[in-house]
Length: 545
Image (cartoon, rainbow, N blue to C red; front, side, top):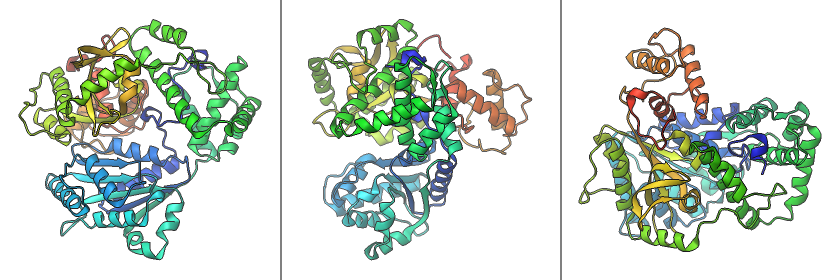
């Protein structure tokens, strides 16, 4: 594995999406703006199309991460190969709507009641369906019926249909004209140009925190751009293979010849690997990258060294040794069985209470009428904010807040939640214990964790709203004061969200390994409060800022 050779904390060009590596090119930012415009103006239907690997899912995830959980309810459907009733049930499940009937009218009525409730509480409901080009005509008709749910003034749900260019052809059909006419906001995601491709590659190398000596020559960048056509996914594949070739040749300079060799090797080997093999190997590499990232934040340099020594990965193709990280099956079965005894809502309540306890907030009583979707309201009732997380273990440890992790157990319906409360040596502390176990290894976490979860945090200075560029007032002055305390902002506190403020925010974001977009979102505020001692933020680790 080339991580140690280049000094990376984790692989910079993983094929699996990671919010920490998000880079929005010019075309991605335009797509983001179109989606946000459609949602804010309650367009009802929004269309997003683009070639395979163009970054559609990345845009959707970035959008959802920016939507305030207090004012939005979101759901993302990744498996559109469902019947109309199955899709409706899946939508209800994602929104946490429990229905006693599986028939479409009953499920649609339950969804309508949920949407009316959210509308009364001032929340915008957003549903995104990815890979929509695979939807059957009957399913598209079901989606059109869902879009009919409205008040006398506005749509109750904002629906984003995201798919490959084939979706455009489907919508041109005569029988699809009613649906097509409702999509008033559309955007086709174009490939990145050469300049953005260079910025994209540089960004991912910087986030992975390499030694700083890795150099892609201009010739290598041009070759990768020609091969990829400016699409992120093939860029990742080409860069990853180029780094592998560079490692095998003991050089940190990736020139045109090395890039060409990597691309040629990748193309020649592509036919020899079945889809099944790739799906098995990619998560293994992703888990390893996350574990190495986690090792850095365990505060123990030996953790990484021991991990590499005991679970060495060959730097040849994408083959791994048989001693890769595999949790003990008997132990894992016990954990799964014990978790399965607890309902989804009860496990969510227990995880919520553990996190609330870290803030000395009152718990939710066992006899309370509580469900997963009620966590945001429960947090607000305790002067806390709920942050919904999506990413890998390394990204979660970078935030360094206690977290509730969403698990999917084999053969069991619904989800379960486990609270991550701290770190001890090479394990992750959980509370309450499961089957007497107070900790899990990273590999046990990866076995069941969906990559989704939630964190509780406080916004004592009430900075989550009113942080737009050009805005003025006390909130901006308080933000500038925080940035000063963090050692980032040295200008006078003007109370104006100006260029100096945005630059300071970007500098702070870069220092914490998150996207430097200058937007003061939930994660930026969480890290800002965490970096200042007087706020006494509960941490997974000790001694870090």
